[in-house]
Image 1 (cartoon, one colour):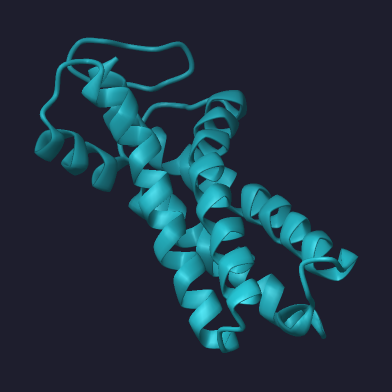
Image 2 (cartoon, rainbow, N blue to C red; image 1 turned 135 degrees about the horizontal axis):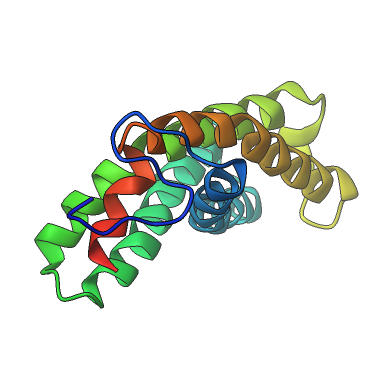
Length: 158
């Protein structure tokens, strides 16, 4: 971590607090949720096939997830290319886990992929899917941060 330790972060295979893991997951979930919801709204409003809506949501979740991390580390003086590398290292696994969970939930709930924007099923299933993604991804992030992986990579740049 470039000699820059943070409370709750272990230095190489240390212990990471659940609060630190939850904070990292929430940061990642913010970008992921923006992209996920936007993709679902665009796909549904445009009448995309279900697979197209899911793919759009996944692509936008990664774009917005990476963008939020990049925004923060660019402020620390990194170039766009360097910030992108940090975002890839920090967020790829977290976003991937979230996307697997939230899209699995949305697809698994009967009728959700056919629900329209004015139906509670559309918004309720999205909220549930993102909440479950947070619950499943937090331990993953805790494990990664305790090994100086994932979100721990960002801490040397702020």
